[in-house]
Image (cartoon, rainbow, N blue to C red; front, side, top):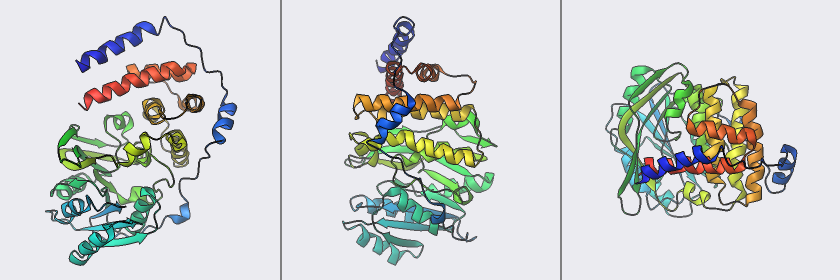
Length: 383
C-alpha cells in the first residue's frame, strides 16, 4: 500500500507541475542574508591551531573514540561491546567525558582500571564535535573508529573492519547498521548495502552509501588537517561532503556489525523537533564544508552537485520544518543561489531533476513538494 502511494505521488507531480505554475520567490539574496542575520550568524568550523595530531604508534591498529555525556543508562552495554572484542588487532579506546553530570564518569573509571587500553579524558561540556576532536587529538592508531555512547557493536566489529582495511589498504571501511529501540531492545530496521570495493576517486558512487560518521573505520591521515565543526549541528555531514571525497580506496562490508540506539534522547530526534534557528545550520555548515573542500582542491563535479541537491533539498526541507515559513523562504533563496554556483551538466534522476528545477526557478512550492515525495520514499524504504 505504501509503495502504491509513493507511485501515485510521483504520477501527480509529473501530471500537475506542467499545468500549475507557482510564482518564483521574489526575495533577493541580499535581502535574505539581511533577514537571516537578524536571528542567526554562522561561526567558523574550527581553528587550525587546535588540531594536534599525536604521532602514530605502529603497534596500535585502531583508535576507538567514544564521546560520553550523561550516558549512564546505556554506557555499560556500549563499553562492554568494545572491550570484549575478539580480534588479533591492537586497539585503544579513548573515552572523552564531556562534562557528564550523572554517573557516567564513575562507570568509565571501572573500565579504565580493568582495561589498560582504555583511556579517559575529561573536559568541560562542549558538545559531541568538541569531544570527538579531543579524541582525534590524542589518537595514536593507524585507523580511527567512532562509536556513540548509547550504541553498541558486535564482538567481531574490529576484526571484520580491519581485516578489510589491511587487505585493500583502504582509506575508509563501512558496514551495515541495525536500528534498535533502546527502551525495549526491539530491532526496528536494518540499513545495508551490497559488498563494495571502490578504487580511486568515488565520484557519484558516494551517493550509493549512507553518510554516517560512525559504523566503520577511517585512516588517520584523512583527519590530519580536518576536524569536526564546532558549535554546529548536523556534524555527520562531513562524511559525504569531505571524507568520502578525500577517499581513494573505499570498502563496504555487508555485515550487521553496528547497532544504533533509537530513543527519544537521540540528538537528531531532539533537534529536528525544535523550532530553533540553529536548524539553519543545515545550509551554513554545508557552505563552510565546501569552503574547506575548495581550499583542498577536492573535485567540483556531478557527485558534489548531487550531494548539494540532496543536502539543500529534502534534508534542508526536513530540518527546517519547525521554523516560521518566512524564515524558510529566506534560506531557500540562499540555497537557490548556492546550487547555481555548483551546477554542472549531468544525468539526474527523477527527484534530482525536479529539485534542480525548483532551485533554478526559485519555486518554493516545488521544493517542498519534491522533498515531501523523497521523504515518503525514505520512510517506505526504512519500513
